[in-house]
Length: 172
Image 1 (cartoon, rainbow, N blue to C red):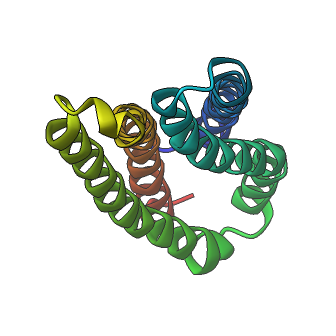
Image 2 (cartoon, helix red, strand yellow):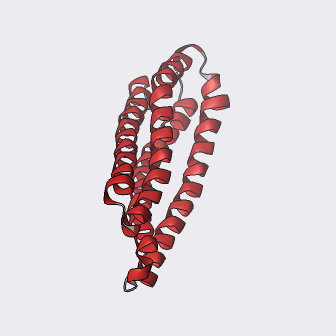
Image 3 (cartoon, one colour):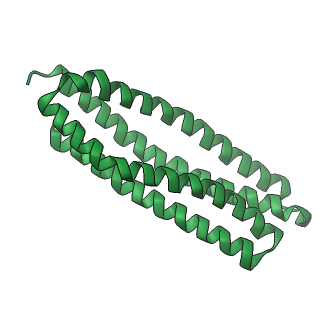
C-alpha cells in the first residue's frame, strides 16, 4: 500500500532533480556567455543560442519545482491524514495533467533533437555555415538532456500517480 513516506519521497526526489536541473541551466548560461564574449566565432555564437534558450528554461523549471516541492510535500501528507477525498478530487487530476504534459514535452524535445541533428547533417561539411552547425550540435545535446531528465521525472510521476490511486481505493 502507498504510504505518506512514499509520497514524501516523491517530492524529495523532485526537489533533488530540480536542483540538478537548475545547476545545469546556470552552467549552460555561463558557458553561453563565455562562447559569446570570449570565443566569438560564428560556430561558438551558434552554440550559445540553444545554451541560453534551453538554459533559461532549465533555470525557470528547476527553480519553480524546487520552490514548490516542500509545500506540496507537506500539503499532500496533511491531506492524506485529514482530507483524503482531496487526493482524489485534486491531486490525482493534477498528476494526470502533469503526466499528459510529459507526452507533449517528449514530442517537443524529440522535434528539437531532430532539428539539431538535421542542422548538423546539412552543414557538417560547410565551413560557411558554422553558425548553424553550432546551433545544431548544442540544440541536440540540450534537448537530449531535457528528454533524459523528463524521462526520469515521468517515471517517478507515474509511480506516484499509481500509488495515489491505489491509496484512494484501499481501506484506511
